[in-house]
Image 1 (cartoon, helix red, strand yellow):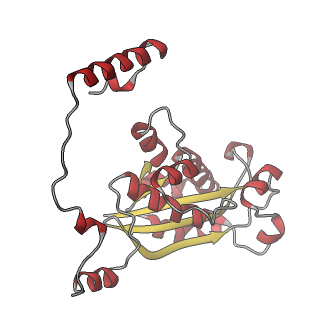
Image 2 (spheres, rainbow, N blue to C red):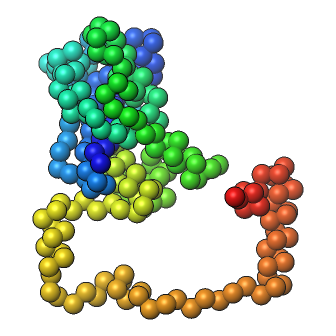
Length: 237
């Protein structure tokens, strides 16, 4: 299975107001393994960048003056993402901007969804963690993903971080090892003293006493009443 983790940076918040893409960053996953293939490009938007946007990503018009336009790279970008599943955090934002760029090139380019499918990790995170903050930074903290380099937003860096978050959120696999490294580890003859090996013995199970169960149920009922009937633990399927 081929997936592409994608992020963009833009001149503002709404493509309907004429805002444009200025950076695209993509990271490839094959069978849930991060490969060494990347797609990263800065783009000249032919317009000013909102001050608020510059504060977020730190990219200004002077830096973009000699960069290509989206029309120059549209075909190579489509070739990179074609027939993949795009993994995007808050997908309507990025997909909306890409579709707006494609529309400027003519109807024969269609929409991004004509070339690939889209998975929104923000929707996925809200399902897994209802009522909690699910920004990329919040998810990094929740899944212990290092985002210390993220002083400013950047499309490629954010795509790399999101790839690790997505793998952790959907199964705990965040290894960046290539196949050669994995094979080397499999053939290593040294004794394995990793924590995983030391935890192979069955864990002792301590069951709740009846009095403790009653107190737990009383606490849940109090939460149910205080939250107006929204105690999640009482309504789990």
